[in-house]
Amino acid sequence: MKTAIAIRHVQFEDLGLLGPILWRAGYQVAYRDAGIDPLDLHDLAATDLLVVLGGPLGAYDDQAYPFLADEIAAVYHRLERDRPTLGICLGAQIIARALGKRVYPSGTKELGWAPVELTDIGRASVLAPLDGLPVLHWHGDTFDLPDEIQHLARTKAVPNQAFALGDFGLALQFHLEADPLQLERWYIGHAAEISATPGIDVPALRAQAAQYAQALVPVAERIFTDWVNGLPPARVPSTPS
Image 1 (cartoon, rainbow, N blue to C red):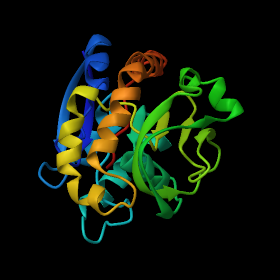
Image 2: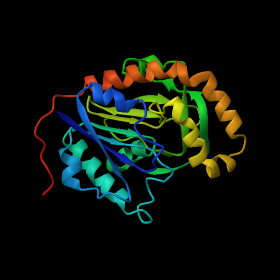
Image 3: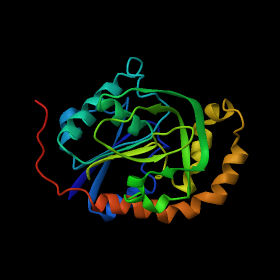
Image 4: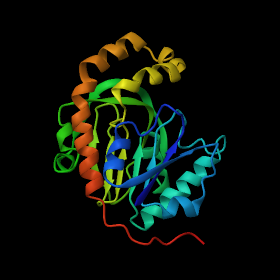
């Protein structure tokens, strides 16, 4: 059986809709809780798929949260060897940092449901079904695009929303994985951030989710299924010395 490791930063931002897709694709999935579980570089290098999930940290906060340096090192090692790696929100920012690019506050908070605009490359990618559909945004940081990637999606406020590296790496600034049935956990866990964001409150987020979330589920499942099924064949990885 293939293996997948998901690095989780807060309990409620888990694999969500992606979890059952990985199981159906034949992956044995294990979580590593950042700050609690050891993030062993050999372990993270050897797994068939690494997923780096979201969280309320900044990818540049490694002085306060030293485990971020371990995540960045593991992602760098994998991407240098074309090993399948998926980053979501904070995870996407960690991929950008691993590739030597800057992560920084965007100057705006994208919190709630809004569409992304696909690039020409994005419209020909696994993200094609997203065209015109609102997705869940929950971020205040952005990143510079790494070199030699495929830029897939943008918004007016935050131009760098998604990119791919060949058929093995995918970085999503937004949350396709979020399970609509679990969003109340987000509203509780992010209560302080919601209350500090002008123009945003929990009733408004609930109303947006009621309008958009269920329609996105089959689209998100199709995107993740197509991406997972398109990953390169597993091979014996080289591990760090």
